[in-house]
Each structure stands twice: as C-alpha cells, then as structure tokens.
Length: 271
Image (cartoon, rainbow, N blue to C red):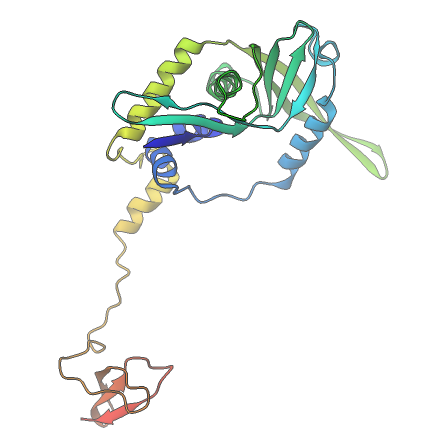
C-alpha cells in the first residue's frame, strides 16, 4: 500500500489516537469534523496577509535577512518505499515560505495558541514534513532547496481595546520559536508511523480519545428493532394492492395479514 501522509495529521491526530490516525490514512475514515469558530480562520487569514512579502528584519531579526515569498502552497514528496512492499508520500499545504538573501529557504507556521516546548516539538513534525517534501518533490511538485530554517510564530491573544465607537482591537503577544532541522529523527518518526499503518488494527485509544470512547459505548447499545409481530412466516400471501410480502398482526378482531410496506401501503387480508 502507498500511504498519503498529511503533515497536519502527524501532529494532533497521531498524538491523540493511533487508531483514528490508522482509520483515516488506511481507509479514509476521518473523525467527525467539529465546526471551527470563524474567528480562528479570520485571524489566520489576516496573519498571512500581514506577513506576505514582509522582510524578516521587520518581524524576526534573529532570522537571516530575507522575506516571505509564498503562502498556502501545496507540496508533495516523492514516494518513500520500504522493503516489505509498503510506501508513503507526504502531501499538504504550508502556511508560508521565506527566501533568504543567500538563496536558501525557510518554512514557518502560524499558531494562535500559548507557546510551549511540547507544542513546538509536536508541530516540528509538520514543518519537517514540509521541508522534506520541498527538497524531495514528486514530479511537477513545488521544489525549493535548501531549506535551512523552520519555525513557528505563536500569537497569544491577551488584550482587548476600544479604539473608537466603531472599532475595537484584539491584541496579544507574538513569539517566534525556531524548530531544529533534524532529518535523522524525522525519518525515524516516519518509520514509526509506517509501523502503525502496517499493523492489522491498532488498539482503540478508548482511555484518551473521545471518538473511541463514543464508539465503545455504542457497542453496548442495542439498536435492533424489538419486533416479533413483524416477522414474515413461510407461505405468507402477497399483498392485494402492491404484491409485496405480508406479515401476521394482531388486531381487535383477531389476527390478520398486513403488508410489510405499511404505512406506505395499507393492504390487508383476512386469515
């Protein structure tokens, strides 16, 4: 099998539930999507507009001189094959790419969240996946090399101001966290992911995953119809109105034959 790996799925979904990750990649069965508050999409959109064509000296002097040149572009890597006949490739859409004055590139992601080392490490997988795909693209895919810098721009809203009667300002802290380019660790991680995907069925994470908890609870809920009167005995007659099979039912005058298509069809016969 050739597995498509989305860089975003290598973060929360893989960390959150290996079983749900396995279902999505192997069988295309995604967790039910939750409605995303429009404010997060609005913030992300305004961030990308703000950083487009902006020089690094204007927002992160610790980066080499350069500027943002691309936003929200698809990448797709060449296929990575293993000796057992399985393979994978990376396909996804990055937030932004920088081009430095020395001709090298950087990949950045925007996050509306409180920054932490744990989040930086988790999101680092996503950035390393983009870097790998850019440097090792499939035919006709976007090709940029070398990718020397990876990083996250965290926006943490913490203030709300009234600028005028018609305008308010939502502001917050901004923090740049650089992610180390570690190809060796990334390839080991991809091997780990492949082992999960090649497994027959990973155990559901019912202790941590809300969707697995829901599925396990539903297994104990009997949804089969409690019907005995609607069973169709052998030799039942045909409905006089639609020619469908009929079933025995009990009425106030005793048993009678009723069409199985009731209430769409109200055909009956006397026993």
